[in-house]
Image: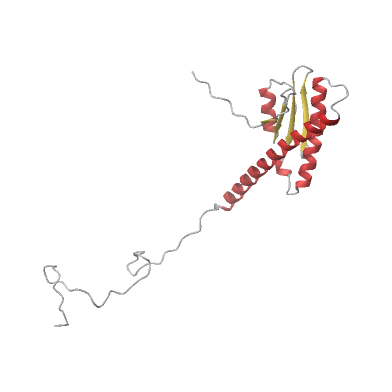
Length: 194
């Protein structure tokens, strides 16, 4: 029996050689899925207030760090998004240091490189999610209006017989044409030069 690979609605962030425990999601439903996937029975919820949160969940040996962003509250001000990401990355780096037993937390270059690495990943993912959220929102709005955003209606000029015709430009039949006899055989043309 071939087992289907599980699909996840959240992101696993690359933390280099540190324990692979940092996750990113965008709503409480997916946050609950992360807890379930990691066998966490603790009752917790995400995004009770604010635009973003960072959670360290677990004991000293097994833990996960979950960053949660509410993309519906992210506006077009990229400066605010960068500020929020930087703030949450700072918490995530502190939690990671705590998890691995780094007594003095990460300092100097270790903190700087890890923070920059995480912030870059999160920014790219947030921009992707922001676009997805915008598409979902525009689909909902267009469904509410009862019209989709589609192609404009094409209008075709019609011939007198209501057909579009070969080139949509009506032309009168030519006065000069060959005549046919009663057997539908073309009669020869006369040569006026004789």
